[in-house]
Length: 281
Image 1 (tube, rainbow, N blue to C red):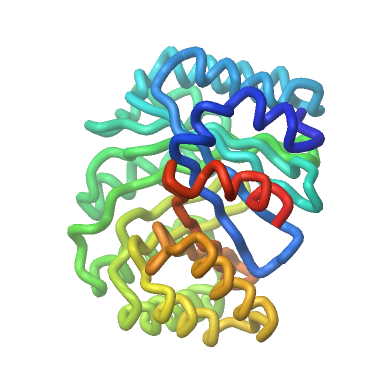
Image 2: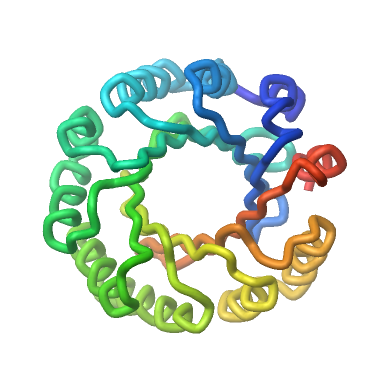
């Protein structure tokens, strides 16, 4: 596994100095670093980054099986850092035309909660096939899977119906569903989500809002319990990276509540001067 930034920097130096995306959240000790690729060698480098982590062989096997069965068109690899040490590694498989139920059969069989939900979502709400699958290995040895859908063509009301239906399928209590709906209602003034994901086994729902302005991001933070010092750090980070808007603002809902994660893309122009800062932020 990646215990410091050096092996990650060495493996993905070319990608990091071309285009890199970082994610930040309420916890100032955490930072995510995402790189992009479209080759088998990129996948192999990603797998190597988790070598030595407990549960590695099972994670590797699931990635290789998914690669063979689903024919992805491109990839993302993400390392989530905490205090400059890797907390987990995630490989994302992306699909231009979507991935079928048959291709995902190995995932559906592995996780009981996935056996019916993805099929039910596609059929009941007509949102098409999943466009992305992520497979994560955690520091705790556990693995988790998320399945992503494109929902940019849906109205706010349709999205609320879809998310309510998914939460009910995952047997969320009524108060957790209501809390999610209140947050979604607030977010209608911020933007329209592009992607939705279901996370297994934690029964989470993730929503991604593209191109959220720094001002609207600040408004969103006001609706959370984010400390003032962290809000100032977020504004400072956006200024330092010369970002007028986030690439994405992600909200993650589960039965315990809602959290946020901000994604910022660093272009080649700024990557060389920013990458070390990113890892140690």
